[in-house]
Amino acid sequence: MTIVPLEEQLCFALYSASNSLTGVYRKLLEPLGLTYTQFIVLMVLWEKDGISISELADRTGLSNATMTPLLKRMEQKGFITRKRLSDNERQKNIVLTKVGSELSEKSIDVTVEAFKSTSLSKKQAEDVIAICQQIVRSTS
Image (cartoon, rainbow, N blue to C red; front, side, top):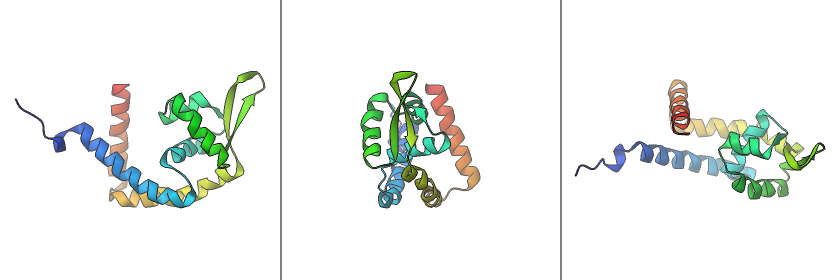
């Protein structure tokens, strides 16, 4: 039986790279009081504020079950508020607070430092992003 070594497995390469980069982000985000997952949610809201929980879950790739406790913690920290829609009492939109909006300025340094840690060129990073997006599209 021929076995493909772990180091030659695409899944392991992606998993290892993701864990490494997430660890870099974790250290950079800690002084801001953010987890990596909270940072991802904020990045989506910085692009488009006031979106539904389901759209936010879709954009981040997180499940609705994950979103509820995550958003609750973010609201307790003062980063977001959950607002009921006037025409649909069951649906809530997620809106940045002033504190949440202001974090976007600090996030620039986090993103730059995380990118530097990879030692990738801009072109290499663009290629990796494109390849990862292709994998997601192909496997969804």
